Figure (cartoon, rainbow, N blue to C red):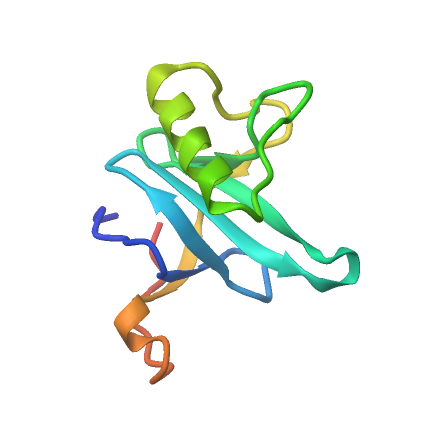
Length: 116
């Protein structure tokens, strides 16, 4: 898998009907969210491109609010420094089925499919 993903790209994971939006990323990690309208919040997942794993963070008491960009940016910094990591217990192997680049979001065209 190439690492050309950027903030704003839409990502579909295997088994998910709705896409996640990349909110923060670097060469190793993607932090993605999607709306959870029933609770007026978001679902989030963190992708480790080096280990091909996606999971929530490994903190017992999560103090990041993934609906706030400043908290998402802080989480990315903490992932890089090792202050937090990905849950081994609650994660799954990452399999991306589709990515739509931010500039293509309005057109709805697929730029990648079946990416593993």
